[in-house]
Image 1 (cartoon, rainbow, N blue to C red):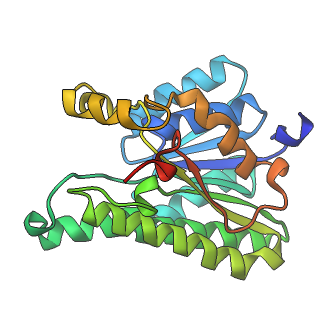
Image 2 (image 1 turned 120 degrees about the horizontal axis):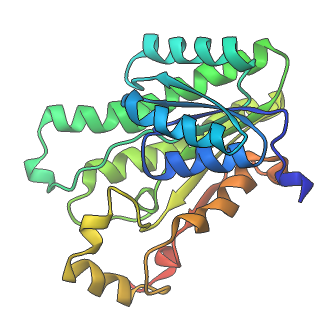
Length: 254
């Protein structure tokens, strides 16, 4: 579909060193976008850039710590210098930690909120400022989670951060829709990624998955359609959406 065509677009993917970030970067490049991939682990970004270039795409690796405004501004400056104004952002950087509420310390809480919420806000704000200054609209796709809509044992800080991302998404959409900037969020359920693979290997996780509606974790390719819908012109009338991509977890029995 031409609506999913990203030719002429400049995109940035944060948290691009693993998981969804790697996938989003590849998908954007395959659809014709010039892609700025950002993460703290620049060495892993270089291999991703080389892979994209080998497939005929254009990509640039930049270091970014989403808890640092200076780092974010520098990454956007580098991306703009190379490709022009960034109008598509996969706001994907985040951390996760399973720990009971009584065992979370202040530093752990701050790390979760600073990365998963403050980082999403600063990246979105910086992107929007530059789009508006350039007189153009765009799309910001925040990575939230099904745990922003539901809860699970040992995930209080993570769930709080992702629920806040969903509300932030709606608030930013309300403010920026009139400027041609669409802000939406993906709410992934359990997907097979580098981070989750060890978890899914446990008997307890397998038993839980078998009790869920889809009875399995998601495959990375199953995130392609939902992501492109929110990132491309195919979703031109979508504003402030928190889209569950969860194999039915959000409708499962409690």
